[in-house]
Image (cartoon, rainbow, N blue to C red; front, side, top):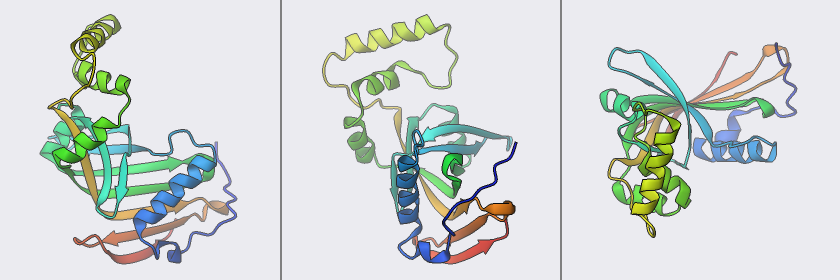
Length: 208
């Protein structure tokens, strides 16, 4: 099974003149316009204490020159692994429009006020779910999970505070690679290497 990509666009280094973060935002808009569901979804890769990798899909909830932000339970597998090895790779994949972006770098927790600000904008159901789920831990059954949700809803009939063990992470990239499918497998790949101050130190075209 193979797709012969026929994009009318040719990814060019000049597309990064306004910054890597601006091109990511533009491509997310293009993915949304192209019919991609949840174009802010990204596959996040971390490694455990033994160096074994784990991947899962999370939602990107912020993009700036400083990095890419996502939120999770700090007791989850991903959070515990990042506590041991604070480096990760995240890939946005949009086969529907023939594009992909991979961000690699160091990950740190965001400030608590940033988490609280994001939390206040979450739907009530999502807030309740964050309290009800002891993420990555075994649960006896779906019924038990529903009971935990009902108990949380009763506990917080009005405003729901941010859980103490829940919050954001920011992946500050050391490199960002943009990929665009082209004919005959001669895909476009452009990698931006990023300095400690967040500015690009090199922009390179890679062989596909």
